[in-house]
Length: 267
Image 1: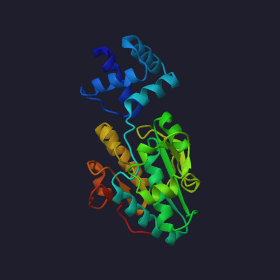
Image 2: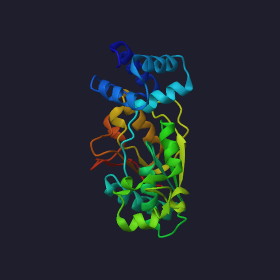
Image 3: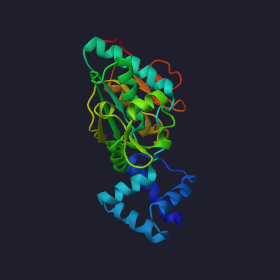
């Protein structure tokens, strides 16, 4: 059971470490996640919080794992991948290469969906595209790098694509994504609320879906402005349809269904 004092400390750490703003409704969620993670009673949480407050790297990673959601899936909002892939295709035609960033990649379903869409639209296994995929949760990134998924996780993948890109068995009831898709994606740890990002632009498209809604308001606006600075003029920012660019709206054209275009003239 998470005490009120422990929850208050968790809220302070969430804001400090990841810019995440917790409300009272998150308390029961944290308790459930803590039980699944083996944090028995008050003592388990107390040890974790104490370590995180003292700067212990492993404790902080574990706490971030409890704070961040791994809810994701292949081809969520499928029109995003169609539009992004076409945009990147034309960007590569103009400049010879293109770059995309999946800024909250979780366990890899989003960047791999994008990789599959790009392989389809380019019609080749070695398109001139780089996909950077980042997340604050190192455990999620470890899953993503393996590229192995249970058959149930592949239900969102159209059957033809499932046969083509997930034909390699990876154990009972599991499949591994094809090497051509894995080879397009570079996974890296990054915290959108941190001062320094291990990320360099420019990007032709950035997917930052289902993450901004968890950030405290000023940090959310700051993150969108920094992302905008890394986008090419005319580049795409794709958010969850329930999200918006907030105070950074002046940097983008009008958004529709979570898709925003970086203002400015294309080079």
